[in-house]
Length: 454
Image (cartoon, rainbow, N blue to C red; front, side, top):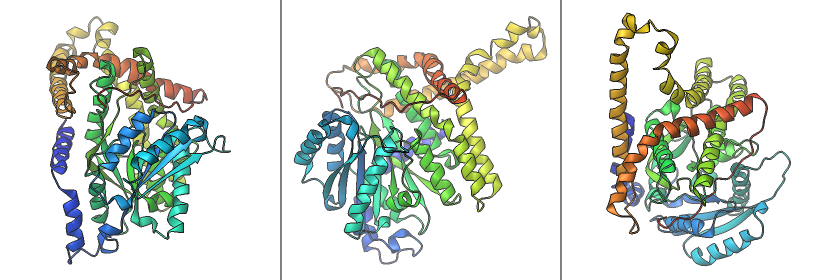
């Protein structure tokens, strides 16, 4: 839990900093390190482009997300919004764009809608096909205005993604103070808490556990990859030919495309000001559980990247074989652990006695209870630490929830074995089994119902 705790401290530290002021100080500083991006690009030359892809999400949800962008302290003239709509969603997309344009027309320097056509040859129905279409249409606008790609930070956001007011300035500062010529992506921590006060206990547990795992990996550069909503310099997106249009795990594909395109020189910069996301919540308890399972299964489909990564590794002659092998083994290990770790922990302690009645009479059998007690004691410390950090990340309690409701955020952890085995592990096994027998997995959009406290 050390990494998770340190990440939490970094979050609180960076949220207290006035990043707008720091950006302004970069403009005034005459003695800037010539090896940093800011030497060639000034803060007031940067653009922020938000690509907000959506399908059939409610207008209220989109408005809540866009309101958070409009509250940003960054220069509104250089804050652009691209609404990536799907033709398959029907005529309602035009009504949605008109409502957004009417409400936020004065809050952004430029608002545009792109409509991703249905049934393009070579594409599958997935988020990144829509995002890539939007990015290519946006590129035409940049070209017409002769805006350089390395002066644009593109934010690839899901429909439920909300930001803090200093997020864009923070990412801009990190970009401008990065080494010149260093390919860098910016990956913020995701806190699934927009609707956390209204979702069922099982979904609260999975949402908060996902955040804790993500926070842990933020300090492990070798394990820290692109995930879901993220920010990039537009030049890097153009360099890798945008996001994949024929695979479900688009975020991990972006990581491997970037890693091998830049021959291992890619850096994923941790962004400690979180993005606020929705926990899974649909209309009804069982549809919510089903949506959660489908979401985890979709994430676990990332193991399908394996042959793709091997192919990229073989073709990349500039990267040494050890780095390529490590990436391949890490991909295998992470998905194997995802599918099996919780099950192993649940059953391995019982197996020696089940298969050997004399096990207790051996030296190992005599010490076995001591070893397991010690391991479980350490695990309990980690669990308590996780509960405390999850409490600290909670948004303010809404008026329709009493103070006693906080207890629900404690007892929910009793459900950890159910969530980790029957939802998370089974979802991973489901995905891997489908892949093994050659059965396809269609992209299923996670339903996002609007709750009272969002």
